[in-house]
Image (cartoon, rainbow over all chains, first blue to last red; front, side, top):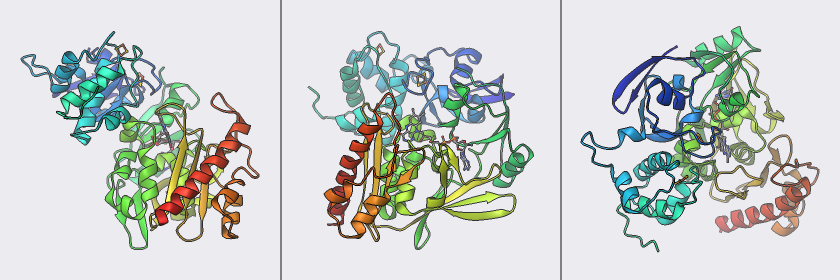
Length: 157
Length: 275
Ligand SMILES: Cc1cc2nc3c(=O)[nH]c(=O)nc-3n(C[C@H](O)[C@H](O)[C@H](O)COP(=O)(O)OP(=O)(O)OC[C@H]3O[C@@H](n4cnc5c(N)ncnc54)[C@H](O)[C@@H]3O)c2cc1C
Ligand code: FES
Ligand code: FES
């Protein structure tokens, strides 16, 4: 079937099988490989993207369900001149990644979280990221980065 | 993991969806948020030939004050239930339960209708619906009918819905704040090993998550409360007559014990909330 999704502001139309998952539409049809597949079972959050502005696990959404909708991936966050999005900048400054595999999903999940909780507590950040696993277990700096991006004044030791 | 092949149809209305279900009662399935069905399809535990996507039908996502009850559209997503002012004021247990489902990504997609229609004993909203004595509205080829929550969950992943019926609305009698939800799991994001929903406004009602093949009421606890037993004494009956499953998370025996602990906590929390 023909599926058209506005990805990072650009209309992407591709002829795909009805069973194509959104993550494979993005990676294989659109060539946007920033979104990773970790578990493929809705557990790890590596595949998190924004669907109409909200975080979703793109391994558990059909491309057909996103037809006519807006998707933002990690590639769509920085400005065209390369200036980082505040969450990316905070990851950079707080060394919030090790191997980097979970990072695109973490950044997208935090971007969505901060829309819903502009000034979260540390506990809200930790709970808000319960659907994202970091195999390198670098959670501490990821939480620091999220709080920094929120401009939260809460002290994280 | 990719699902088996299927034909995809996007329904523009409930009537259209029901028409398609009718054409193919054995092979067509509704798709709402897809957060129970797609994982099963990826594992090939479900292989519907036709997927009828109801996710875009207008006007089925709402939480309304309907006088003596709160009316919730079947396509209302967990996140919208969690943040609804009407739910928080008049059906607070539902809002609190919705907030504890899975993780934010899951709550952005999953719907209350899908959660109830799936009939999974490990799901949280069915227990809350049982504890509130909710009524479900189903639409089929011959119009709508109302099904009490108590008559809805028939077996493992089996409900009173006919293959050509769609759940359209959930009606929850308005309730005060004397309610509680206790969910026990070992890891963030996990399903409940055991969960308890308790409502003490009016006649006490207590329902359990993951304590048998269906979401189930803790009748023995309710009877003990009705005859004046304390929370501790009533909670001791939490697993009476129930045979919870054994799995990698817990043995049946462990669940039976856990149920007594969580029912006590839920009853204490709910009565403290009543003040
Ligand atoms: C990682 C993960 C963690 C989760 N954790 C929890 C948890 O902790 N607690 C919990 O309760 N749930 C949990 N869930 C399940 C989640 O709540 C699902 O969203 C929900 O169970 C199903 O809703 P859905 O809209 O996604 O339904 P779908 O998957 O679209 O459909 C489920 C079933 O219901 C049928 N159906 C859907 N809508 C209707 C309707 N209106 N009328 C008739 N039939 C219908 C479908 O045909 C299908 O058989 C989790 C899911 C995932 C992926
Ligand atoms: S790859 Fe989608 S949640 Fe892990
Ligand atoms: S940085 Fe390696 S998985 Fe998170």
